[in-house]
Image (cartoon, rainbow, N blue to C red; front, side, top):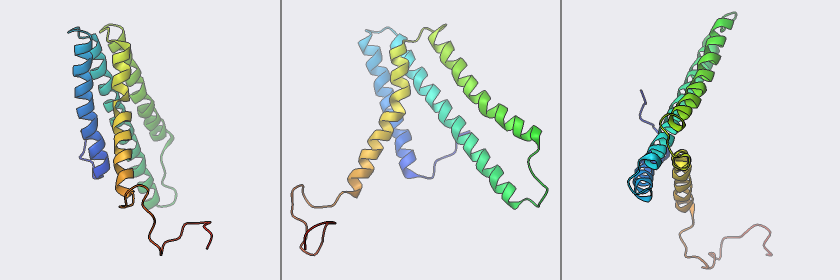
Length: 159
């Protein structure tokens, strides 16, 4: 179960990823003249990245909760070796599932590798768009090439 992200930047990345994924799927279908391999590859790549994101988020959240609980524990209470082994098994198991899913998409379902590559790069593009969006928000309000106000000084400027 995915929780709603509290950070608006992450919500925008998720929204942008969905829009880009839809556009890439339609483009792949059109470029292959109706053949589904490319579109299937895009959708599979997006799904793999979504599962990976959920796995990482779940793992980090569990780790932070355990660390917080360990900070509240009394001396002598700690994680047993069995508990640590189980956490490690779950962590590695998530990645094993991702590898198996990628294999299943590529071999039996015959998704196009370029479509899969396009799908896994969708979040990267969405993060890049968000970075540009955040950078523009921090830019000064003056027009490019406009002189700085007289009371402001730049470092290393002659006085």
